[in-house]
Structures are given as C-alpha cells and as structure tokens.
Image (cartoon, rainbow, N blue to C red; front, top):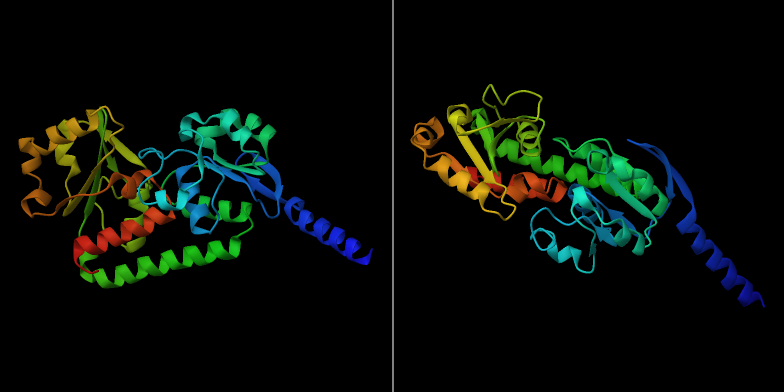
Length: 299
C-alpha cells in the first residue's frame, strides 16, 4: 500500500511539472503557458532555430522558406518534426492534430489567426521580424522556460562576433554593401535587417544609403550605382520560378555593374541567401560569421 501511495504521489508530482503555469507577456497580450512545455509548435523560421539551439526539438514547425521541407543547415536536427506550412500560410488543422501545449508565432504573420491558435493551445507572439533576432530569441527562451540556456547561447554568439571583430582589425573600415535579388525587384539592405545587424555587431562601416536604422531600399536595375561599396555581398532568393535568378543574371551582366568600385577591386561575393537572410535565426547568424571570416581570410 505504501509503495502504491508512493507511485501515485510520484506520478502526480511529474504531471504537475507539465501543467504548472507561467505568465508570458508578448505582442498580443499575456498568456499562461506550461512551466515545462513538452509539445511545442513553432511558426517562424527564426523561432525554430532558437528552439534547436536551446536543445528543444518542436513537434511541428513552419516549413523553411526554401528546402524540402527544411533548410540544409537544420535538416539533420529536424528529423521527425511535422511541417505545418509556410509561415504565411500555416495549416491550423495540422497544428491542432499535433496536440501542442505551446505555440510560438509572430504578429507580422499570425495576428489574424491568433484567436484560432490560442483556441488550440497557449500561444506566444513576437512583435516583429527584422534585424535584431535576439529580442525574439529571449522571448522564445522565456516561453519554454530555458532562459539560462538562452543567455549562454547569446553569450556564445557575442563571443564569436567579438573574436571575429578583433581578427578583422582595420578591415572593418571597409564600407560593406548588401544586395538581394528577388522576383521583380532588388533589395539594398540597411542596418535593421538580419545581415545588417550582424555587420553592425562586428563594427563594419556601411555606405551612406545603408548606414541608417531602417530595413531595406527596394530598387530596380537603374539603381545599380546605389549598390556600390568598398566590398559588396549579394544573395538571391529564388522561390522556384526562376525570376530572381534571371534578374540577378541581368544585373551582373549589365555594363553599369562592371563600373562599381567593388567590382573593379575584385571584392564582390555571392553568398547563401538562406544563411545571410532568409533563415533569420541564431544558427544562421553563427554560420554567417563563419562566412565573413572565410571571405576575409581570418578563419
């Protein structure tokens, strides 16, 4: 009888760990979440990277913007995770079927379906998707009750960036330009972007039209002269219809492109769109630091 009582008490104690509540303040209000969530569905790509870096595999996640269904740099860690649709078009029925005890989303993509998500499980929503991914990261770490682990992940990133900044030395005086080819237009990235934040973190200079706390300039081929810098990085987001790739080829073959200072200096670099922009999380951020080190020869 005593053994049975002990077993029952232990089971009750264990069950209590899963239902104990914590209140999280977020972009859509306040939500009571499990103290130790076991079945998390994450609806942003950067949120997926946050959970993986914290040692937590979600039961479901928004599909990567490119990849089938995950980016190559996270695919091995996502085995067994159920894809629930792209960030902008998640499948509510699939999410409900996973019986999550916590959902993580973002206001930009999920404000309109917040009530439906909340009816499925406690839902925490980030305010924005822009440059400084660390703000969302802190929210995710708090929501899953892994703040101490989160602080270490961020401290490791800061140390990685600081080590690279020291190794680069005077090279940081170069004004770096960041360009992205999209279907139908070109983006010149400013400081409030994923790659812009990282270059600012390292301490790089930027061309005047990019050295502002804003997101992006959307331009066409006529603005090629505005894309110049001492060194230029470009990447292409190709959703599969070939339009972005075609635009990139047109620009790179344009006589105006050949007149850029960065081109004449041999300092133009094609880099991975996923790592330098689209993934948007801590894992990609560290890989981008590695890319910069390799390009500058300070590995």
